[in-house]
Amino acid sequence: MKIIVITLFPEIFNALNSGISGRALKNNLLTLTFINPRDFTHDPYHRVDDRPYGGGPGMVLKPEPLWEAIMAAKSQLPSAKVIYLSPQGKTLTQKHIQNGASQKEIILVAGRYEGIDERIVTMLIDEEWSIGDYVLSGGELAAMVVIDALIRCLPGSLGDEASREQDSFTSGLLDYPHYTRPEIFAKMTVPEVLLRGNHQAIQRWRMKQSLGRTWLRRLDLLKQRLLSQEQQALLDEFMQEYTE
Ligand SMILES: C[S@@+](CC[C@H](N)C(=O)[O-])C[C@H]1O[C@@H](n2cnc3c(N)ncnc32)[C@H](O)[C@@H]1O
Image (cartoon, rainbow, N blue to C red; front, side, top):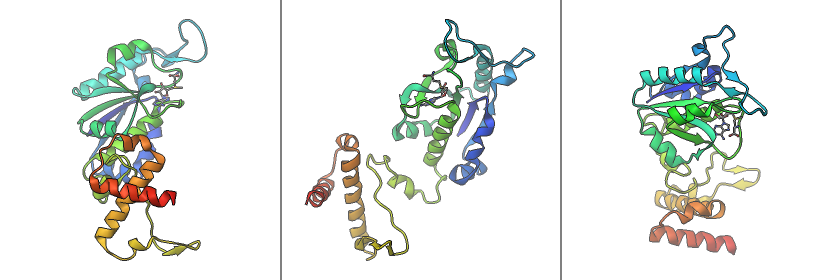
């Protein structure tokens, strides 16, 4: 997968050089490059922002440098969708990320200040993506969230591919609880079923916890999902025990 990010602050993305994303970049599962709109300014001060027409607070990213930066990115990745990270975009879910990960090329545009000139949105942006109903100071952190989540979906990115399947949201449910050594910590013991080595019983317990947690915390997810007879029985069991 190839991603170009249009950003005034490419150095922020250094944080992606650690952990799973760092390994994916090193192994070329993902090629990540940056284009800085400031490199497409033609005035002595390299200005990328200006005051908003109509007055009011803040500055707006000027259209000309952004236009040239996006065009330069499009010439390198001709089949890429151009995505603007924006609090006004569609709120991302794991499904959107999984669809995004099937694309070979993506161009991400990180805004700053009050945002980018609307004419760029109208002419060059294919989609707007939001990472949640809150406002960041810039699109860089949002782009990094998107890139990290995309990387987890790329085959070969995880030490154990099975961990993607059990991740929250992948199957439409929340993940089950995890435990590691020691067996007793702060007087709390690990659930016995996990110590006995009966894989079928462990699978059953994990599915029941997954269903139960989703019921307790994210009923909206459970309502979107058709449960098998066995899953419904496990959930009923969980609900029964919870309300006892
Ligand atoms: C201060 S924000 C501009 C917010 C804009 N005035 C508004 O209220 O819609 C600056 C930039 O941060 C990015 N940004 C802020 N919040 C975001 C979010 N929730 N998701 C994605 N990008 C976000 C966008 O790229 C935006 O252009």
